[in-house]
Amino acid sequence: MKLNKATSHALRVLVACARAGNGLTKVAELAGELELTQQNAFKIVHLLSRAGFLESERGRYGGVRLKASADAIKVGEVVKAMELLSEQREPGADGEQHAQLFDAAFEAFVSVLNQTSIADMARVRQPSEHSGALAKPKRGKSGPKVARAAKPRGTTRTHST
Image 1 (tube, one colour):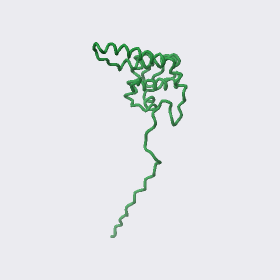
Image 2 (cartoon, helix red, strand yellow):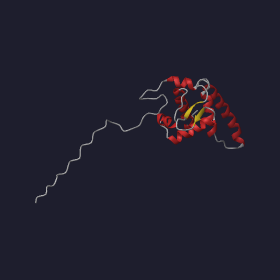
Image 3 (cartoon, rainbow, N blue to C red):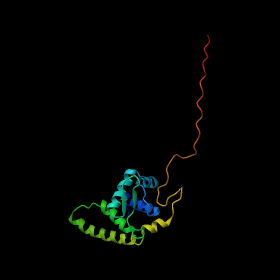
Image 4 (tube, one colour):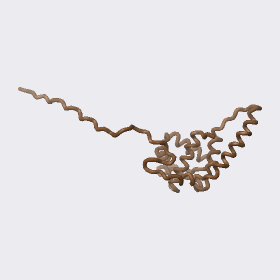
């Protein structure tokens, strides 16, 4: 089963918050660390807050943190909350049987994921300066920086009188 991008980003945000401990983390910092746009990071944080996984404090020294302990937040519950937000079903008689089948498969998938907590994911690999466990690979200019050559100076004119 493939998860949508918002679900993947949500898990990465929760793991980053778990690694930050009880302190507040600014959403802009999360965006930078996880290489998300600030707009996307704010959207994900809003959805996670509405679902009850994050709490936020507004203001200059505000930010977000986990609402419960990282051990108490199960990966399956996060996936279920995020995937159900984006789920769209088409009505129809034939679709009802398919929906029941996929609902059962999804519940089995979630029950397996619920064996892992956000704390487990945060412990898998601690982020280093060059690679985060859940961060996307850094993209930038390749190769060493080369100093530019100095511009040639023009000749100075002398006036004769």
